[in-house]
Image 1 (cartoon, rainbow, N blue to C red):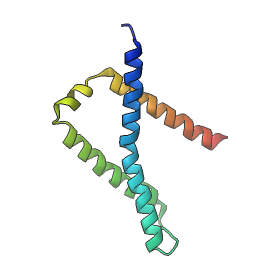
Image 2: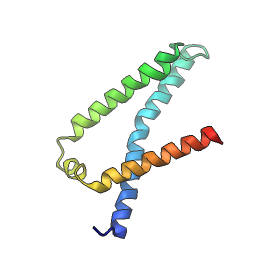
Image 3: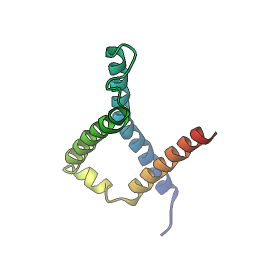
Length: 108
């Protein structure tokens, strides 16, 4: 299989779209942290680390992921996109870049 410039452009385009789509629950969680800190008088609520960085983000991401799946699985354009290898290559590229950036921040 020959990889063309169009394939590379679509991989980068899908990586950009997936990045935007994955930022929505991250922003929701950041908004929750800000609101709970404002309400809690300078301390996020609940104070327990397991809830704050475990259960609450899992619920936010779980509801968002389930809604995404159930809304998008019916649309014909998404069924076509979900069969394309370039979509998954874009997702893989994005997540590799995120992992590398986090490791650079932690290990620098």
